[in-house]
Length: 193
View 1 (spheres, rainbow, N blue to C red):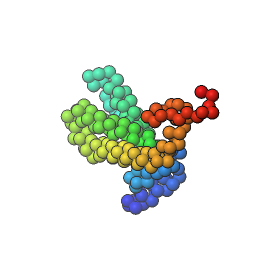
View 2 (cartoon, rainbow, N blue to C red; view 1 turned 90 degrees about the horizontal axis):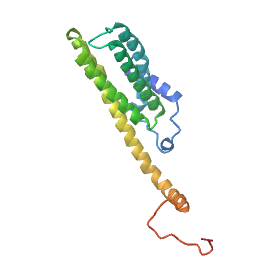
View 3 (cartoon, rainbow, N blue to C red; view 1 turned 30 degrees about the horizontal axis):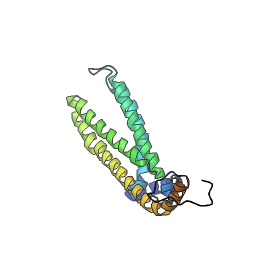
View 4 (cartoon, rainbow, N blue to C red; view 1 turned 120 degrees about the horizontal axis):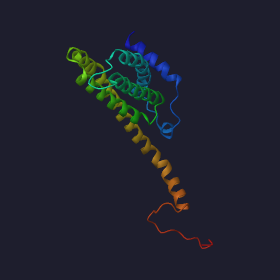
């Protein structure tokens, strides 16, 4: 399947799921092609991660200088799965929470690569290095890029929203005496106060 076919398939999946109904998306939806493609790609990676977790839970030794070594790694990979799935979900919805999910996923992928390489037996170290440099670290870089991109869009949304709401928010706060504006409060002579 060529890249164009993948892009069309990702667009079809993206069209099925509307952006999240968040205040920021009412002003500006992040339609960058990498964000649009990230949802389907991360969803697929999440699904592919499930058999991997089962594989390592069954194949890793039960003991490697510590009890439940296999359970520890399988549990960590379940957490990576949750982070990848969350990144997929929030990317599909183009939600502001993509920043948090992508940061968590990227960080966990780096930790996973680090410990895979350092805890692998000597005869498996080359495979761990290949996985780290070909899959985990590039995917972590994509996650961090998604986080930065989403943060930049959030800042643009705030800039676009502020002029619209500043006056209304100030008026509401002044009415409720919740905001010290620095201006003298107008006293209405007809008011009972």
